[in-house]
Length: 115
Length: 115
Picture (cartoon, rainbow over the protein chains, first blue to last red):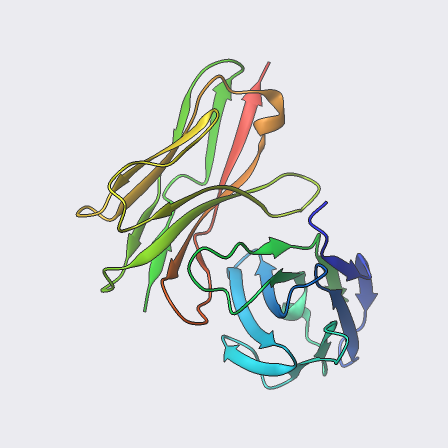
């Protein structure tokens, strides 16, 4: 168990809908990262938050947004869902900014199926 | 942009034997980290081994070792005395050193361990 908790584990929804994925980082970790794993694109970095502030942005669509709350949990919001958004969404956490010797701990992911 | 290539979509090995998974990467940076992650059917991303580019010595973790060839930009993973529990997807990943940097993943290699 990595200590990173993601809910829900599975999510099935329809095109055009909006969903929220939740992540609780390991105790004491200030950084949260979101990654998307799909069959065609592989594992791609979406966005990073550090202590409530956005720190880095990757290939995140405009239909997607995220935030990190004062208690350090994070939510990834996906709207106007399309079939191609079906993927496994990972959250990871680290103590600081992910520098140098810091380890990244991954959650078990949320499997999103858009029908 | 940095890229990571795993040229073997699938590999198989007999239990107790040795297997090597290949990874090449492209970067103009001189200082970075390389990783191998394991993703078993449980979907959890588990760090197997990490290599700092500035270290010439190849990293080793029990039955797992790497062959890091910086000039060739090659980073292969050797699994010795393969066990049934080693069956998983293996991902090679790159991260530039310093700052808030994302992990760049390869597409993965599916390893099957035959009894």
